[in-house]
Structure formats: structure tokens, C-alpha cells
Length: 322
Image 1 (cartoon, rainbow, N blue to C red):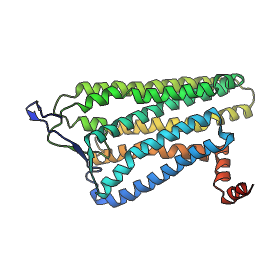
Image 2: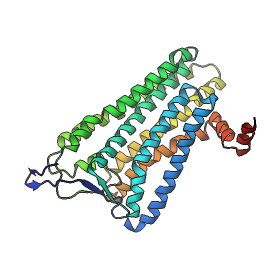
Image 3: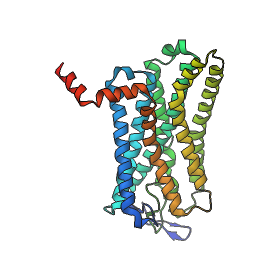
Image 4: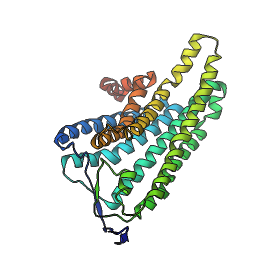
């Protein structure tokens, strides 16, 4: 980037940024390092196991688990994009990140996060068809439909942030290259610019409205139709079975939108310090990638059976002999 005079401030030709991590919590950096290391290993293991189970177990070759496979892959990508670099920062091995690397991390976290919200809406549609139109389920949600929905989800998620992140990468940046956050967050990075970023902030807000609220409204519509359909069922057993079919997905939806609400509220409560806001924001980013696989494994009998089958060394040995 070339140096420019903007608002009486000289922009620096930065080639890298410095991720501060958790300013004000430096005395807890060792504790934070081991905490995030454990979180990283658990998230990595849980999501890799789901990817493995869905591929090798024929009982999981259904639309619901196909979408779950995509969700776990996205969770895995978000985790890998952020936590390894954060661990380096906490160890003070290497706090710097290249200019290109920072914007790639920013783009990747926004894109994967947006894709997850679209995918959650797609999974709501899957549950809607399964409960409201059970006799037509195999016709509506066939393999072609699954692949088409997944392709749309990934394309929307990864195409929508391109314009805002690309424009932000051309902003002139001022004297400080210190990112007072635990990763390259869009709003935190553009705040380092020495020009007016109102247009960029408004563009990001508009993008967030599309990515968050449109899938949310679709999820609400899907569950409204599901509830109406379940109420019309004649027996309590039928109602219980219908609700159990979407309970795991509903918990995942709640985890996404409640965590987003907590983050939004924490940014506006005056009693919460700047360091606490950074910690809450960082923790929430890593919360759902760990919680999602736990919800689907602890509350799902087929996933439990797959875990017992493929994590049992004796069973694997017996299969190898035959």
C-alpha cells in the first residue's frame, strides 16, 4: 500500500499487523493458552469424528447427516483459521500476521460463519419436510437436492463477503498496526484506518442483516409450520417422536442465535470492560464449533451407535479379520 495523507494523518505502508490477543489479561496468558489449546483439541477431535462417522457408516447416509457433515466441516475450518494463530500469540512466539494473511483470516471467518447460518436454515427446511411432508420426503430431499442446497449455502457464504473485505483491504492504515483483538475481526481492523470508514461499517451491517436475519426468519417460518403440524397429530407418542426429530437442530439454532445475542448485548453494556468484551467475543467464536458436535452426538442414537462401533478397538480388529 502506498503512503497517503488522509485526515492530516500519514498512512503507513504496513506489510503486517500485530495481534495483541487479550490486552489487560497478559498475567493469565498461560492459563488462556492451555484453555484454548484444550478447546482446540476437543473441537478438532469432535468434528473430525463426525466427518469420519458420516462417511464410513451407511446408516448415516441420509440428508440430515449430509448437512451435519457440512456443518462440522465449516466448524472445523473456522477453528483452524483462528485458534492456531491465537495460540502463537498467547505463547508470544509470533504475534505478527501478514497484511494478506490478516484479510484472508477475516474473509474466511466471515464466509464460513455466514455459510453456517445459511446451512442451519437449510437444515430447518430438511426437518420441515421430514415432519410436515413425510410421505414426500425422499422425493423432495433426494441426493440431487442435497448437493444443490449445499452448493448454494457454500456459494452464498463465500461470495457475499468478497466485496466488503476486498474494499477494506484497500483502506489506508495509520501509525498503529496493533489489532486489539484475538483475531483479524473486520470492524476492529478497519478501525485502524485513517480515513472515514462509515461506508464500510454500513456495508458490513447490511451484510450482517442479510446473513443473520434472512436465515433466522426462514428458521422461524419452518418451525412455525412444524409446530402447527405436530399439534394436529392425534397421539402424544406421535407428537413426542416428531419433536425429537428436530430437537438437536433446534438446540444448534439456539446456540447460534443466543451466542450472537450475547455478543451483541455485551458490546453495549457499559459495565463490561474492553478486555472482558474481547474475551467474550473470542470465546463465543469458538463456542459453537465445539457445542454443535456435542449436541448431535450426545442426543442422537445413530451417532452414539456409530461411535461405539468405530471407536471400539476390538470391533475394528474383528472386522479386520473378516
